[in-house]
Image (cartoon, rainbow, N blue to C red):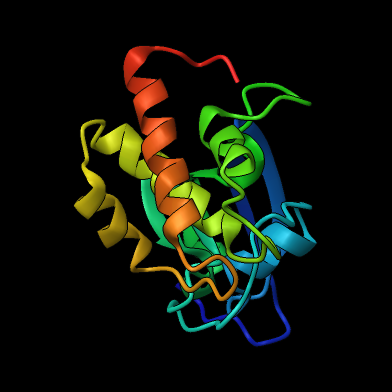
Length: 169
């Protein structure tokens, strides 16, 4: 395969929250930047750019991923989900998002999108995850505002509603 110079771009095509997306990216362009600047998915936040803070967490092929550690060209052909895709329909919050609102589990909101994506993935993969597992997943996120307790309570509340089938928010 021929090497691209830094000035060249390559096509990038993937599915974002159920819709096809295409564009061009330099080989070194981060997926987080591509999502925000090319796709308008500004809910994906960039904090540390080292994969530590968790603000950029998305799902790629159903698996949690740090978009600040992923190159846009690596997303070729993938299915990507961001926080914008969590709402069941425009103007309506998901059960988890509503629980965050109800429990005041966000303040500045910078970390919230990544936390929501991680918890949503946890509940899809492990519907019976307990509080210890929830806290374990939250350990991959830095939040400087809430002290985590409202986040844990919102997660437990949302999980209880999801288990019971009560998805009315």
